[in-house]
Length: 252
Image 1: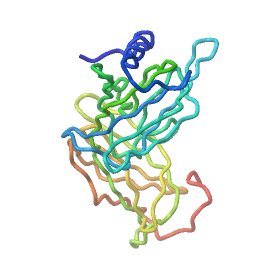
Image 2: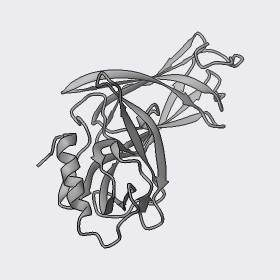
Image 3: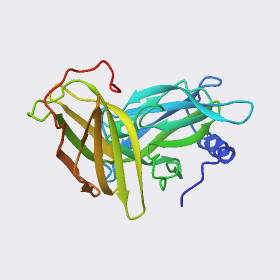
Image 4: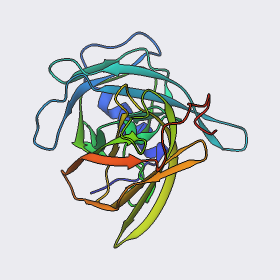
């Protein structure tokens, strides 16, 4: 059963999780440790994880603050110590970072007998990399089980008409998505590698079309279908012109 992220309830739950632990923390300290596994139970190694703090202003508005980072080790385990008690987000990418940079989506976070799920998985702007809850002081949470799922990968090459790649340069990327349940689009800035390639990860089954903008030029991909577990590795976006000088901004 999926649980709502009600902070008042979660505070009580997390206090209960810390009660039977034989290794009490120093006064006021909070820690979180566990393992990241995929949907088959295999550990995920060298995966960046983030604990990001939530601040609440006098009007009750919430904003994200600074964050802690910890990568899983070769057995898939992670450990955060010295976490400031309060509202946090457990993330696969920090706030203000494009979510299509991470190859995984967050399925669940299991603490004791309770499983928490990411916020609003039905949203077209998929928030599938965040689980939010509150931590109290003097809390030690061990054996947390984080389950993730590999996203679908899109790898594309950006070239000019003569085949020359637009290498090692920032560009504006618009991603358009459509399925039976809805459609949406969003823009982000990407950076090609030395061969003109870039990689993005998506988590929705459906039809995709990518648009690249450089100076006054636009290159649009074909529309293609991605289903769960599939990848598109050979996408080509070509500007219909000969190479022109690079600008100093992805927006010019």
